[in-house]
Length: 230
Ligand code: NI
Image (cartoon, rainbow, N blue to C red):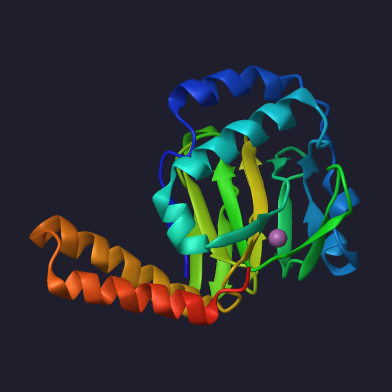
């Protein structure tokens, strides 16, 4: 299931982070890739502790917290510390790969936390007009889809999918990405819950609260109770 989350960052917020990105200490993206991904990964990323990464992380987290769609689609239990990456010049692509199933979420106080990568999220930090290529291509059970969204918009896709970023041939593609360990591990079950939740929302908008929406809301929560691990 691929889901677009519009306006995770506002134009004002994007305007604020742009100068930080221009002077940020970009590093070789291979440093954080597993052995298979390392062979096909060719981009740059920011260290977690630099000003640009910290500011973007803070804004993206706040944007996600405002998004009811993000909550309903991802049912987040743990979120991996968002990373910021750049594609362009000599470091312009990320070949087909599947992300490591478990990532260590470092840098926080206390014991290290592992995040199972059930859901992947990319937040686009600049507009498609700024660059050529740089399409996120996701191969899932419903076929192959290419994604290139306006600045500030995000896409959620299953962590289980083979995916790539096609070569950027002009300009730079800037994005923030992270993984979510979901309360519901199965993509199929998450999809059913999401569809039920979204349809309930529009039923309520159209007809108000009815005996049927109340009953179906109960069904939603009972399914979530059956499938969620917290
Ligand atoms: Ni990946």
